[in-house]
Image 1 (spheres, rainbow, N blue to C red):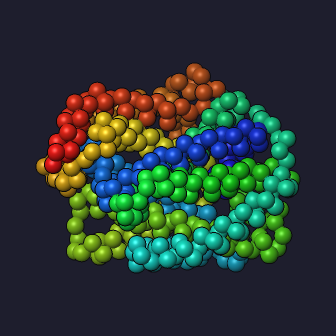
Image 2 (cartoon, helix red, strand yellow; image 1 turned 90 degrees about the vertical axis):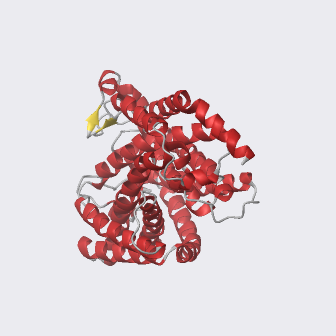
Image 3 (cartoon, rainbow, N blue to C red; image 1 turned 30 degrees about the horizontal axis):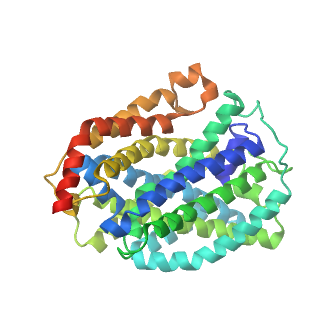
Amino acid sequence: MFLGVIPIVVFGGGFLPTVLAVIIGSALGAAAVGILSTWGPRFGVPQLVQSRGAFGYLGNFLPAGLNALTAGIGWFAVNTISGTFALSTLTHLPFQVALVLIVLLQVFVAFIGHNFIHQFEKVAFPYLAVVFTIATVVILVQSNPSVGFNAKAPVAFGGPLAAFILSMFISFAYAAGWAPYSMDYARYLPPAVRSRSVFWAAMLGVFLPCAILEIGGAGLATVVGTAWGPTDSPTDQLVKPLPGILAGLTLLGIALGAVSANVLNIYSGAMSFLALGVRVGSLRRQRGLVAVLFGVIGYVVARAGEVDAGHSYENFLLLIGYWITPFLGVILADYWLRHGRFDEREFFNRRRNSIAGVVAMAAGIVVSIPFWNQSLWHGPVVDALPQLGDLSFVVGFVVAAGVYYALAGKSATEAAAAAATA
């Protein structure tokens, strides 16, 4: 929900343009997750193992390493902060104590493994769906849809168009942030399942909660009496328009939602880490050790992000978008060139290496740098044309896909032909 607050409070966007932007961005990101999820039942491997088809065994260290960092540490810290704020507001515990409790619960669930995660998510889902839907409706009733562009917002220098594009990008980045995990759970579905069913289940499963809660967040930013300074707790603002019982249930839902999201992040981050080829005992032991490691590091990062969480969250969403969109460009181009035909043995062939995927992804990242627009770096294109906001997600995807097509077009089609006859 807090993602929906950022476009209005930080970028200065109007309510209605922000609603449109988060719907478009969430739909695009969710579509990427849906497409990749359809590959899971077909190949039966995690996403960052399937990507070896485009990157080769050693080249795959690039996306696997980045995903291990963003999933196991970055997303862990971001979601942990939101859960900690909620638990602290609900129980009046000090932030540091609430943080330890949230971290321990998340690592415990992820440590146990896939089957327990599924059972945990089954229990959490209906509660989260009902509570957040009711809270969103109550907030929207008290919101002010007539709020327009605010030129005095901290990052409003690009005008209404820049606010719209930035809003669309961060909502896309949030939804697409699940793309590197897409196959991790869909791979357990039977191979005969219909791809269309998998796509819509995964796509809507990402799109609906993202769009609804982000719209609710945009509404919350317009509610009279809320305050959004660097030291203001976002969950303290959330409960202001909610009646007492619903406020408590919503805060509990945020804490539970943070745990639900992060057990997936830790688990898939661990899978990405293991895709780097590191082996320490059995798979179960490796997963557990990596979950604990990410929990410790994520705790330290979350502790550092307690103050001015809004800007930290904005920067993080933009940063993950900078590498995920070129990654998507590479693997989608590879799949298209092969017409979906892979010899699955190549996913595990340590001698199969290609520079095409790495070069294409790196090119997508490098060429997009002039378009970056965040507090850590303003590219020259942004300085010259601030009204464009941040178009790096478009540039990175197109460049990466184009470079991969140029470098690997022939080899990919040949590999597809060989796989068809294998």
